[in-house]
Image (cartoon, rainbow, N blue to C red; front, side):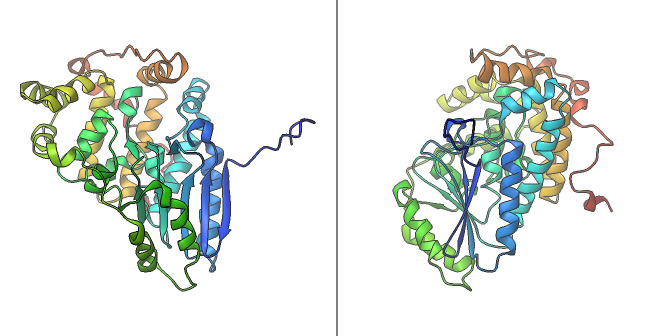
Length: 361
């Protein structure tokens, strides 16, 4: 309780056992359920407890409010931390990435209700799960190149494993997709009407002890519906042709040569993104495509995050998007061809304590 006002502060993450389901509700609706370090720690503790609880058949993760499942990490907090040494930002990334890896290897059905906005870190706590549900309201994106950052939370693992080069399009443009493209891209498993989500939760809570992934899937399929059409199926050939290019410069050149509205729109978007972020993102996606594990990609992303603490584009991007909200960032360098290999070296540091030290034993 705060003072004598009678106001009771609610937890940032609410855990509830309902029947045989363990609920994890992100409770920061005014901030679109964006994650901070306290939330990561609370959520990790809940997931660990549910994993050990024999009475829990499935875990269901959802966001408070109607606007967002989770809009990502709290970039303002990361920005502010970076200004004073980056200790909190470093701890956040390390613990968030551990949680994402835990989710990817969770021992029970992990059901993510991806209703509303799902961006950045919100994808980390959903896409890696075993049962990913989208709705007609889902807006899924990895928008980091627009704030001078890069797609993390294992995106360099899951984006290159989408069909063709659709994940490269997502990671570089930062554009959002809906339910149909999430299913097409393998980032989700089922589409349900948003009005049925509470019924799904109750049905899963009623599953008997001894149920498993097949029974959870059966519940979800009872409510599933086909989503409205997406853009990947329409533009897949063009996306693959253009985004298979080896460099950002070649991608931009290929887009400019296409007599196609989708190509023109894509080019216009890329020209607004941080040139340094575009080059870093493409390198991470290419490296991730050749990687053997999610952990390997998260290690690489963590190192890149450390480099971000000294990246002027990140602070400028957050300023323009969140602080001043003028949506007019001034990138440095201002063009892709001015970004050198030396400019990217800061994102590949050596010698930091690994996120997963057991991999190096």
